[in-house]
Amino acid sequence: MMDEIFGEENFLGQVSVMVNPKGRGLKGEDFAKTHEYLISYQGAERDETIGKEKSDDKVEKEYKEFDEEGNRYRALELRNTHKEFGKHNRKNLFYPFYVNDELLISLEPLKGYEVVYPVWENGFEGCWTWDSAKALRDYDLLVARIVNGKKKIYRKSYPTSQDGKRVKQKIKTIWQDKAFFTEKGKSDLLEVLPNCTFEFPKPVELVKEIISMFPPENLIVLDSFAGAGTTGQATVELNHMDGENRKFILVEMENYANTTTAERVRRVIDGVPNAKDEALKNGLGGSFTYCELGEEFDVEKMLDGESLPSYAALAAYVFYTVTGQSLDKDAAPSANFFIGETDLYDVYLIYKDDISYLRSNESALNQDKLDSIAAHNPDSKKQKVVFASAKYMSQDALKPHNIVFCQIPYAIHKIAGN
Image (cartoon, rainbow, N blue to C red):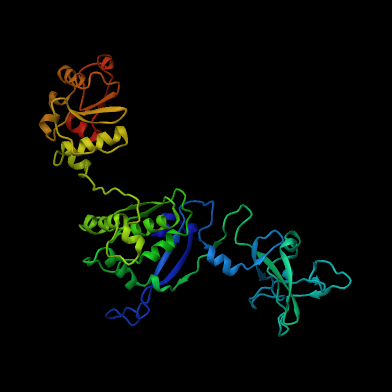
């Protein structure tokens, strides 16, 4: 299914996550399942590789040497550490370096310099990880060391790239951190919602690990099956930790969407009095909006008159169509047909969820309705947008009142025309 949606060429990798070290033995199965999978695809070409940046503490522990300019680096052996690769199958990677007693390196034989090949202690002829062209190009990164009385070649590895960005760790394909275990997910949830009975929620640290692999700038995290709201909490926690402004969209269709999914996010933002973590106890900050889908707009049911949207539902639809904003409250029919306003628009709707009304002249914009609409906010400079099934006047009659006419959605208009 994922191959069909994203394309096989966009498959990035698969991770096995240890979720239950004891194993979950289901009836009728011979194996006790200890892991689940994370499957990764890309939707388009990426400017950056995914992966988690190393923390400052980790950089200090791993990059302990300093170059002439004071930049941290670590020395990685240039010899390939896998014996399946060697002179026998990588001849272009088997060539000599020359090193003197001051550990200066040359790619050409010089007097007083000892030849160094990628040979193992047992005599196996291995190979370098760089070819000679790259060694010449990146000569400044090469360093020599004496290990157990023998000269070896290393390369400098820096924690930041040339453009100053922190180098990312490649993603490993097996995750075994205890913070990713299923039982941790349950305790995370109960800390925020003590009486929640949601089964098998994902651990917060697991979702944070996934989100943190991506650059935070303009990041929007979508969880189409939000469940207990772990993704919301994970995003809020990461923003609190690093001051970034990641956004999230949670989608949940079950009846616990408000009482569990959304409520968990509310409490994480506002504070959880009994939380062990002081930051969570005081609230992590941030904001979110809880929304529910309105009535379904079923075209076939509209056409046969079986189901028409209510006035409030259609009002919300047309208002958003014009303004790109949501109505603050449900609109109701009024004498002047006004449903809402923004800084730029006043919006009006002439409509009833009744077939006979839609088929009558009463559903059209006429002179009486125009007078009523024009009298509403007469001094306003805003554009007045009027939705109706039809109009019985020219645009010239509407222009002096700054009115623009729009037909109500085509499916409903078609009913009126039958």
